[in-house]
Image 1 (tube, one colour):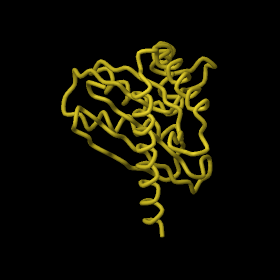
Image 2 (image 1 turned 90 degrees about the vertical axis):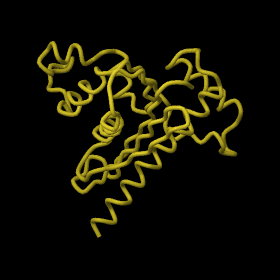
Image 3 (image 1 turned 45 degrees about the vertical axis):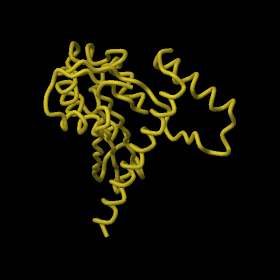
Image 4 (image 1 turned 120 degrees about the horizontal axis):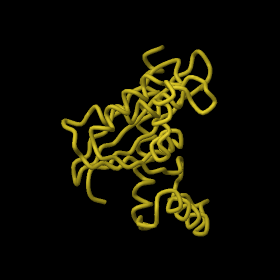
Length: 187
């Protein structure tokens, strides 16, 4: 897959509890060049970590004007950009369809400013899929690939799907590394 690809994942252990730990992972890939990033915070949410992963990836870019594909297992992030929720959020004074304040507004504003400097497409990936698992039947793998194409278009080959899934799993590993590092610091 050509161009700049970004693979992200966020995680939160103990989501919705005061003493939780969150982590995020991001991988930037341009040809043979790969950069892995990870970080986290305490007292956070999964959605904040999903956003933080994408923000960190864009902050790592040295310039704008790039053609970028972002692969995320966060329907929250992918759907916002694909369905352009942010247009109505801005128009409605950062209120959602229920007329409530948009959660994580400060993160969305930063991410939008970063994304708008580039030509970006967002793609959704099913998280936590182990294609190498002996428990996964060929029929189940076929269904996962079909769902990936339904979400993202038929232009993705089976090999693309397998690669994107592998990279998403690596981003998840990076998020977990960040959470482990935070837990070690708390001891």
